[in-house]
Length: 404
Image (cartoon, rainbow, N blue to C red; front, side, top):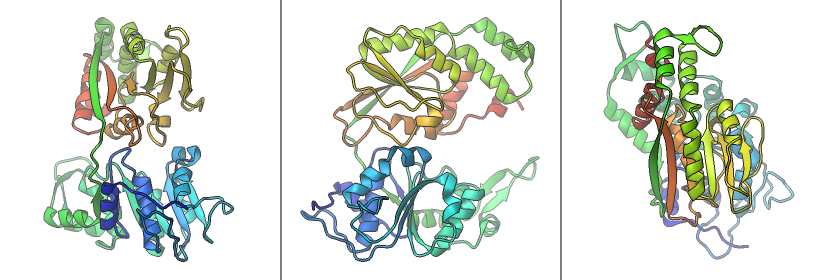
């Protein structure tokens, strides 16, 4: 049996990993294989050898990941390199391997003496997933994988607690958070003793020193919009599609985006790009955008497929194709090395989602060096505001834009 081979930067990260750490690497850096290598070496395996070295009595392995990664079998492919599988008939060890989604994490509360890999870090806040995570980590060995481990100190609270740095969330707040006195809701004014927080974060964060061979080229393609109709919605706060007043910030932003995103110039820009790039992945947000993209006059012999809440079609095999992907359904958990082009028909509110989406073609084994990302935007206020939030690596705030 062939041995397990890691790249130098993966082996370097492996040597710095420990129970309770966060393995942090960009999309496509090979976090899955490195995390499995940690489990493998923890129980007697050896990497970068000619022949496979078997583990000694490895415990059960539970991988908690996204529903998409579970369903597409991405983890199964990585497990096969280690001669492990969720199918006991294909696993050379006498242990149990489970791959399941974060939605089902509650099922594993009560499991003891297993090894958990928590993929695509979801332990932020204080909801049910975090409560289940904290119960699981008390009884099992574990590591976390993340491309973006935390935007602020409060994102680290569950992991700090799981590592035993704090007893609970209250202790963390009492020691480190000062709330604003003049806010109507709990708003953090500043953090105390951040030096300790930096030291604790550095103890658990293992960065993968990953140098890509690819070069990302991001190009903004400006498109037009109906300025008069946009101004009318913005001023009157009136829903022209249902002939009634706009009731919420979400509805206000949705209507402005619909007006902007349905402009014919945006569809024309897609066709212009597709004429020079024969294989294209197009990310979109809304169903009305899908309707537009499905009905475009693409070049002859272009095959169109889609991945969203309605259809789960595979990427076409031909020389000319368009793959339409809805952000929420397909921003993570799959990859494609048969194209060098992604078109973002509209922007997503989340910087993390946009990063995940970009990573679908920026993989270790892509044959391309230059990768092209086309961001379709108008100069409407809503597009500019979303763009600013993404540049600042923040999530767009509809209520703030609405003026609440």
